[in-house]
Length: 281
Image (cartoon, rainbow, N blue to C red; front, side, top):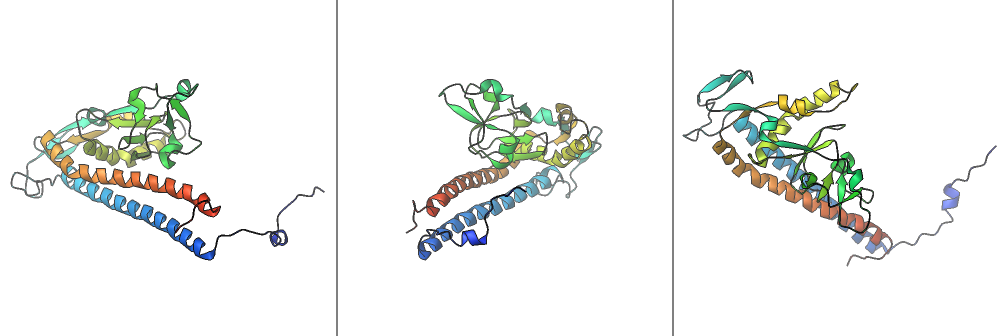
């Protein structure tokens, strides 16, 4: 029989613990609680802002009740609708159809192995699927800053993970280099608010496609993006919508950036408070 060492209640009863004064424990706990509450509040505000923005976007560009020349809801007020054979439905007169790749550029990340740093040169952390979901940490890989600019990601960029877990997000984790299996979505022709919500609109469909392909590849390809058609409003209407939605997305980005800083502060403070290196006055 092999004996295995283990800890039990009797052993713990002989251990002495050095604890801060009770009042200091309460102050430390209150501080950490306030940080967590602020992070949770920012998350709630961002979720409500996102829902509000999507509702407005859908009202204008899905239900087609954008303001007409008289400021009334277009479709509800009898605005002329025209059948589009590609979309197989009616859209407002003067609109057309387009593919997702017509309104945005989907740049795939790179295989980062050949960009690993060899010395003390400046680096970017690599955004893989794990970082896409959870942000950077000490175990995140790094590459030197000679990576192509098209795969450098900045706060506010739109990322679309097209393999494994399919998600679309406004990135706010800090500057990084994009790895494979994630698209950076950009456009030289249309504002971010337009292509962001158009890609989001297709997300559930893409998830269904990926689920059906699980026994083979289980991901989204450029062909799926080409085949995904959208109703395209006149540019002046897109700009009018952008004027309403852009401040909302900017606030969401700001909230998420603040949460990143608060999380870093909390994670730095916790061990410092526990070992007495930092106290709360």
